[in-house]
Length: 239
Picture (cartoon, rainbow, N blue to C red):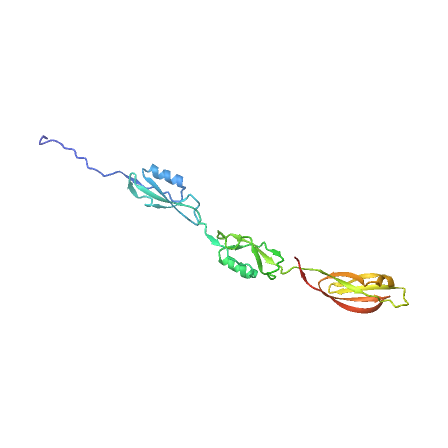
């Protein structure tokens, strides 16, 4: 029983203690997490790609800094995983011109290198793409640098032909000076120069010559032109 004049003290509840959410934006995950824990709050992590923020940096927080929360309340922080790596399939640009191939590669998200390799090819015409440094159909990261090998066309090697010189001596001539000159675009070449007699023509005199395309040769006896012939060096592919 309380007396009529007794003094009664009343304690009014202020509710649960509130704690201020710290600002952890742009901080590293470890530093931000520690600040949240020291603020009597609970860090909850989420992760997301970001084109700018480095890996491990906090790029968002919920609720925002300055919010008042009861002790142990969750503060969500979004941590950067860095720029997302996007993969693209390398298109097949073989047997296309370099310009066509380069445009398609760039449109597909790849970089085209300046390191061009050239090679002969039996099938792909000169100027077209033979191969890439990455096999078409392969998935690689966007922006990957790809170089190309360009065809020089079908390789042609010089062909050896035989010039046959038959007996050009008269019966009363024992020996003559024989000269054979081959005329090509790049110039003339003496392919035979010497004295010959009847015995040299028991069989035709065979003179091997090597070249490409067409040429003419002239046969001289004692510095006098005897005859002129055309010779064709048929193209042969390198096996």
